[in-house]
Amino acid sequence: MRKIVTPLLLGLGATFLTDLWSFILRFFGVKSGGLLIVGSWLSTNILNLNLSTSQNWVLGWSAHYLIGIIFSFLFFKINSKWLNNPKLSISIYFGLVSTIFPLFIAWPIMGFGIAFSNTPIQSILIIKTFTIHLVYGVGLFLTSISIKRINKTI
Image (tube, rainbow, N blue to C red; front, side, top):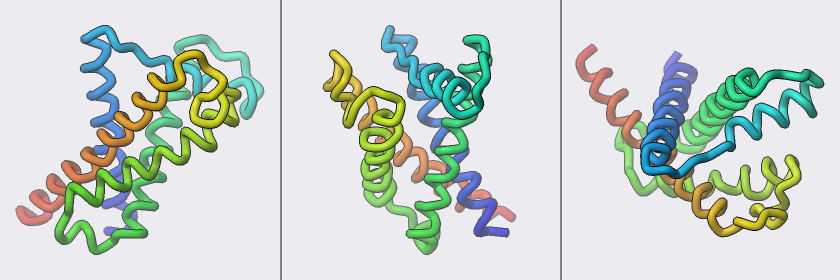
């Protein structure tokens, strides 16, 4: 049970923190269309559906959480003992290493080039990617602390 529930909670918590971060940035005028782009690409290229903008956003958001949970399962598999004594540095390191997926696999598949090389704002998008994955790493750590505290009270 612990091998399923713990990484599931880690992924949900860490991904939620990235959403909170994006919401805060939006408050300051920093916008991101990443979830809409992902949803639109998935609906058109994988599902072969013609979805509305709001449906594409929901699909992208769902994919975002699924990917966050998958990454947390990978993190937990690599570091199953980490939860006993969580270290912020290890979770941040994992978050930063996880940028390999969007920069060199996901965004290139969607036509944006390796590390956004086909875009006019490559450096901005790379910084945003590293930042959101750093926040994901912090989210892994904070969620693990919450899980530890809950487990102590049970």
